[in-house]
Length: 73
Image (cartoon, rainbow, N blue to C red; front, side, top):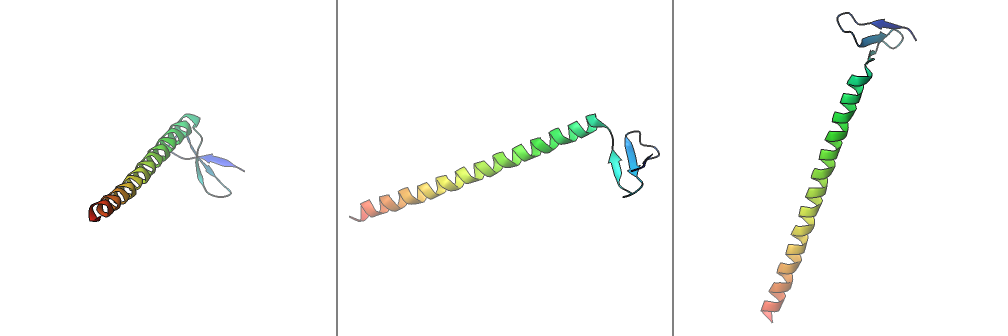
């Protein structure tokens, strides 16, 4: 697999077989991965918050139903 430097970009190389551009900088890769993990964590936290809200809504509906039944007696 031969690699050729991309003109004007110090950390980019082009794979001559697949014609893909590859970033050869490990520090830039680590920064990218840290951002990726942070986005995933934020997404997971939002998903968890939505689940908790939906559970609270369901519990409130159940409480409301029980109160309605008690008041009807």
